[in-house]
Length: 293
Ligand SMILES: Nc1ncnc2c1ncn2[C@@H]1O[C@H](COP(=O)(O)OP(=O)(O)OP(=O)(O)O)[C@@H](O)[C@H]1O
Image (cartoon, rainbow, N blue to C red; front, top):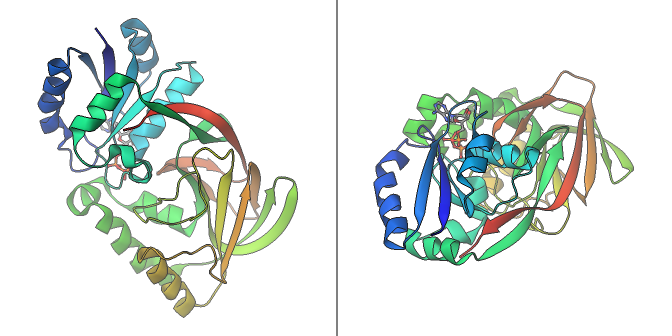
């Protein structure tokens, strides 16, 4: 009988995953499989030992990007080589949105999980931390961190947008030095994003070239520009237009980056606070196996 650990975050998104839990248990039970729940907490020191004791076929993660990041980090740091499935239950679920496997009805995805249909994807690393979707620094990062959890639960993605639009006039550029696969550039920019997938902050098509299995990450910087240009860029991004060809965007694909700045700037990794700059960013090819439909 196949066993799966279900790591679920009880407070992510609208906190309603708890109500779906019973249905999910029933679906696995109907297919003669066992679901072993693991309730996440802000710290999950026991997760690695829990998985090793259960010896599951795979791990199912129900939460947002933060939960996914946390579980993948624990797995990679503890040598847990198991496929993962994602049940999007966070506020924006950026990573899950870029994988069509998680969209639509549960049923066919559960069948694919039990059948063991998988693919492998790259992740990024910054020091001893891994990111699955995006690392960023600059003005966007402070906006994301300032959005209160209660506001996120009530307004979802809209909370980010409302907060972000309100901050636009306060945007100040940073003098950054970027090294991409050994080539150095100096760029005065409002923010830098390093993406693995093409969905960031609920916005699709952020990098039309981003692929999860190409051994590369995509760097996007919005260069210093006027407020009307900044507003136009924001509108284009929200409308899902191709932004990497925007004249104010610096776009580079590479397998490693070094980002530095003369100011004290904190980064963000998959929506959670990351280390301060400088950042040494690397691609770890084919690091994670994911169940696909
Ligand atoms: N039992 C728990 N109680 C309180 N906080 C928790 C618990 N389990 C995990 N967390 C916290 O939840 C956060 C991760 O939430 P997650 O990012 O998955 O959801 P979200 O913020 O709603 O969605 P998204 O990242 O997609 O916007 C982490 O900061 C983690 O510490």
